[in-house]
Amino acid sequence: MTRTVSIFGATGSIGQNTLDLIRRDRGAYRVVALTGGRNVAQLARDAREFNAEIAVTAHEDGLSALRDALSGTGIAAAAGAGALLEAADRPADWIMSAIVGAAGLAPGFRALHHGTTLALANKESLVTAGPLLMAKAKEQGARILPVDSEHSAVFQALVGEDMAAVERIIITASGGALRDWPLERLRYATLQDASAHPNWEMGQRITIDSASMFNKALELIETHEYFGVVPEKIDTVIHPQSIIHALVGFHDGALMAHLGAPDMRHAIGYALHWPDRAALPVDRIDLARIATLDFQAPDTARFPALRLAREVMAAGGHAGAVFNAAKEVALDHFIAGSIGFMDMAPLVEATLDVMSREFRLEGAIETLDTVLQTDHLARIRAAEQASQLQEKRA
Image (tube, rainbow, N blue to C red; front, side, top):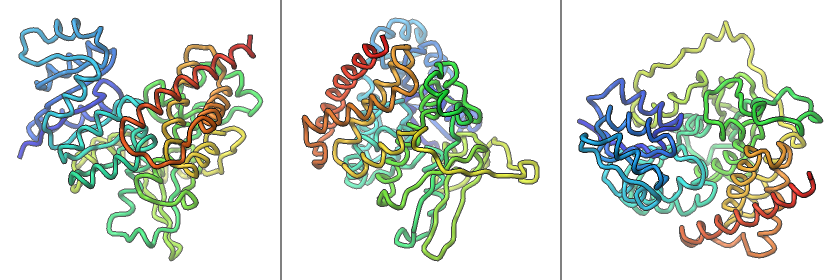
């Protein structure tokens, strides 16, 4: 039977890998909606190839170019935040949520209203509004499947297991582009230095987040929210080879590990075909050739984002929304060259401090609107912190 699918964030690395898998079994899927950002040409090409019902660019100034590129195809073109929500309202059996950042929260949340299967690659959704997202899925009878490689690995390791028997969850980290740099050199890291991941092919933003370990900080929070595990049972370890993606430890001492080549099509394919497994076009591991798997504890002096993630989990409530918003602002400023690589974590910490003094972040999250309001205000406060850092650097 043909399954209907929509892909939010189709022009990014996750979206392109998802389309690659669908392309290999075209008869099994019908594409409903594809969305993207500034890469309107790629969005139009994909919409044409897969004969999507609608293509949406998040940026309204890209609508004219998108319409021109789709002229004569019968494929609808739309733009803006409202159009993203309308696309999420279109019935689909399976939706990939791969828009980067907090911008992916509202479309994913809207899709859950229809009881669909949401393949979640947008980790920020769980970080900013985990309780709301999980409650909405339960209320609507929808299924959220993790697509982060680490959380997909945990999900698979838990098949047939009792959560009450879980003693710990360990997610692995490559250490990113700067993992072998001396600590004192990190303050001089350039955008180019932080944008070259040694193992994974990803977009620039997540690659930089990998170098700073902010992506792992988000994933610690994501693990807590998705699996309902207390923070004390969640840990991370640096594993340079990126072969083991996560481990689950049980109270009998057993440790179950998920191994796979560093290819996002593992996790995407598992979510796409769940509850079945399908053959995937990914490399097979040759353990004899790899020979050695290395591990080391992360240094919180190098990666203060991990400490901040612990504090955010302890606070709960709106702290996750503030953390993520400040992180995105800090990353914007690093990419723009206005702050240094090692300025990002202090900026996030200062924003958390300011917001916690102004508001009671620990309170329960009530609505999506309150999360979005918190996100908006946190971005303003983070921008103020960035300006102060710039003044000190001047």
